[in-house]
Image 1 (spheres, protein in one colour):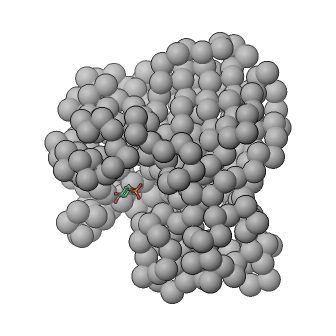
Image 2 (cartoon, helix red, strand yellow):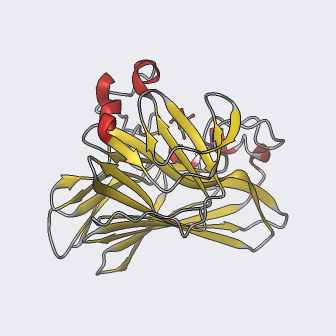
Amino acid sequence: MPIEATDDKVELISPENPNTKVSVLLYGATVTSWTIEGVEQLWLSSAAKLDGSRPVRGGIPLVFPVFGKSSAPGFDQLPQHGFARNSTWELLGQIRENPPTVQFGLGPEQANKEVYSKWDNGDNDFTLLLTIELKPDALTTTIEVTNSDSKPWKFNWLFHTYLAVNDIDDTLVNNLPGETCYDQLLAETYEEKAPAIDFNGELDRIYQNVSCEKLLQVIELGKVVHNVERRNLPDVVVWNPWTKKAAGMADFEPKDGFHKMVCIEPGHVHDFITLEPGESWTASQIIRKGDAIKLQAI
Ligand code: BG6
């Protein structure tokens, strides 16, 4: 204590409250559950595969080295969202007792060979270091990407976070008006005019270059349910599959489960980051409890 490791997963348990804990699958280093005093904060499909047969539907899958599908040279053979979410990471160990903090690593040796070989023909030497820290009121996930190669290469990063909500019909996401948005469903770029994002159908948008000073809040019936802070993650994908898309995903259950989730996905996806040999890039997502509504104009 306060961490418990088995062959396929690790649990971090808060020394302050045994019902505040986070569970991380080695497969994808995917956070599959995070509870605060027994209340689940993330959404996980009841049909999610946790056996390594496919990326986990729910929790916090990790997206690297490409977001979505790309036709860019070196990325065009990769499946959607790359290979970090379908590789088995190595548990490097616990680096702090309190707050409980663990690290996971992934390099070419651990990476899912079949998928990794599709990124620049499997020719890029890289090191990913994921640090997960559990505080009584917050979960921080930090990624460090290092170029261990003798040539530069490029990548995207994104935390594909499925946040739990009580009812998507009552849910708003604030602090995005005025931001540039690429709507993946319309294939159009526009300026967000709505004072807050609401949900009444499938929604799949990339908000680009949103200042990390901006807090993103998920608000239900006037109450803040999640605060999402970002460090060095300028883009925010907001996604809800709604009825038809959920129906088409075999691992999305229950089918009306889209009422219980919203994906707020901090990343760097509007362009590729280039890392020179020996260089590193670091970024964090912090999801925090907190009641105060904070409105930040552009
Ligand atoms: C989101 C994308 O990040 O991930 C969506 O914006 C996509 O377009 C969704 O549908 C889920 O992707 P996947 O590969 O997990 O089904």
